[in-house]
Length: 158
Image 1 (cartoon, rainbow, N blue to C red):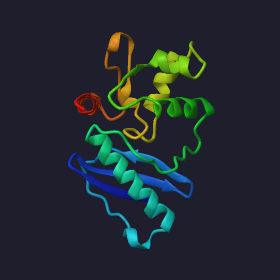
Image 2 (image 1 turned 135 degrees about the vertical axis):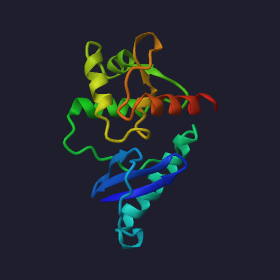
Image 3 (image 1 turned 90 degrees about the vertical axis):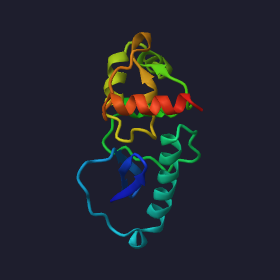
Image 4 (image 1 turned 180 degrees about the horizontal axis):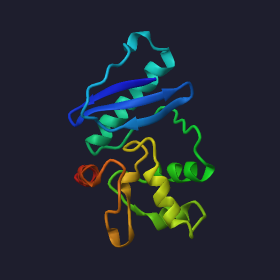
């Protein structure tokens, strides 16, 4: 189930399964139609409220309170480990791909960590933007480097 989240930066799309938030898409240029929230199951309405609050906080460079349950259907155990490690990076701080590889006990998997970051279905809330390449080079970002710079800049101005 896809639901919109309007922000000053555009309308994001949150996708939910019966288990939780499964994806968060950056604003698209084309308008989309969404179902009315009143007809949704109570659990999804509650998760959507948490997602909205967390997204608005992150976009403002602020710490996130509670996240909804996260559902990563079809993800490998390795990717789930990486994404869980990303959730441990505090607002305003950065890590390298190597740091994340070491934190999950796979120090030789730096490139695979980068691939997992690129495949992150819940960017912004699972903060892959806080991961940089060697020597603090910005690296890549699924939504483009402008978004990565914007998010990092807002977090560093706490």
